[in-house]
Length: 237
Ligand SMILES: Nc1ncnc2c1ncn2[C@@H]1O[C@H](COP(=O)(O)OP(=O)(O)OP(=O)(O)O)[C@@H](O)[C@H]1O
Image 1 (cartoon, rainbow, N blue to C red):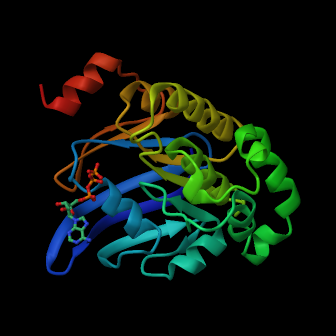
Image 2 (image 1 turned 30 degrees about the vertical axis):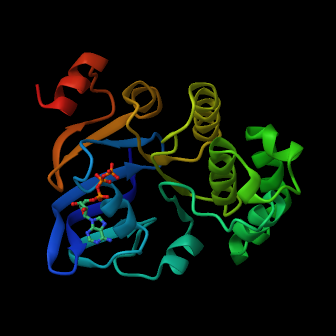
């Protein structure tokens, strides 16, 4: 698996506090990477540092062959690395249609706007039924669909999803998981942070357990680990 994203010896955090300590991960051009681990141990911080929202203190990040550590989030999105943060952060007074249009603002994505909109509607047919509805009137699940749909409008070469199923009711969660699997089958590689281990195992070929801001365990593509072993790692049994 050749690397699309390579994070090497990364240290980052908030103010004088380091949250990530010498962390290294690699994401290939095929297959998905799953990050899991206890709450508050640095998964979101790692994703935010990769997408330029947090500065690195040391280490390197390379995406699509180019260094991106400390580059602006905008230029990182322009390159095709798109991050859907935890707890959808959409503008509440925009309609679904307006959010999707906004997602295609980069020059690279504008060329594919119509085709990407079609893809989004195919993956999330529910959105087409509510095209002119404002975000603030949507359910949590629908908002998550808009968040991911907006990211897809940016023609991602790599899509980052931070806990996409968080807080969703079982039926809508199932629907969202199926859509995320469709996105992956459509050829977009993913980095996913997810608490639902079953879903994470179904989706990911490469797993990292993040503990105390470090990679505690790596399960490489081709290495198998069953649900019970993952749970044992997760809960430290
Ligand atoms: N804006 C911030 N300022 C200061 N400290 C922060 C900030 N955001 C997160 N932290 C701290 O960084 C540490 C790692 O948090 P992070 O959100 O990266 O963990 P996580 O593994 O993603 O957890 P979760 O699954 O709960 O989102 C925690 O101790 C948290 O309190």
